[in-house]
Structures are given as structure tokens and as C-alpha cells.
Length: 113
Image (cartoon, rainbow, N blue to C red; front, top):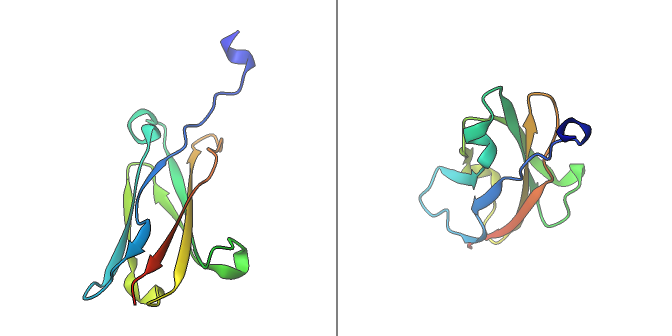
């Protein structure tokens, strides 16, 4: 019976950034998450990371799209991409080696002026 149903892909859990971000004196902003897949997916895959200016997650608002190796749980992004006082949104999902995908997880944050 087990083979009849497609196996669900676990969603990652966002750790940071969220809420407010202070980039004073920083060159990068670290995006962090936790995923059960990182420890159990020995066959590979990647995290699909997308960052948007504003809260509307349309391609026209996208400022970064990156595939991150499944063994990683964070990525450093150049702080110059973010403007003080602006709101940004990011989404993340896991894509397994067989191209099965988790649902997206989302977070929004504001860069301190």
C-alpha cells in the first residue's frame, strides 16, 4: 500500500530574517532555515530561495532567485540589495533529487531606517 501514495516532501521552517532587520555596519544579511530533509535526503536536492521587494511575490518584484545545496541551512546575501525602511518578503521550498517539491514557506521583514 505504501507505494500507492506519493511521499510528501517536508517543508523547511524559516528561522530568520523576520520582523525587523538592522543592517547597520553589515555587508551581508543571513537567511536561515531548518529542514528535516537536510538530514534525511542522502540522494540530494536543493532549496529554492526567492527574495522579493515588498509583499507582493511577483516575478517583477523578485530581487534574488537562488538554488541552495540541500546540505546548507543558510545563505549570505549582499546587504546592498536591501534599502532602509523597505519591506521585503522571501519564500523557500525544498526540491528533492526526483523533483518532488515541498510547499512554499514565507516570511516578511522590514529593514530598519
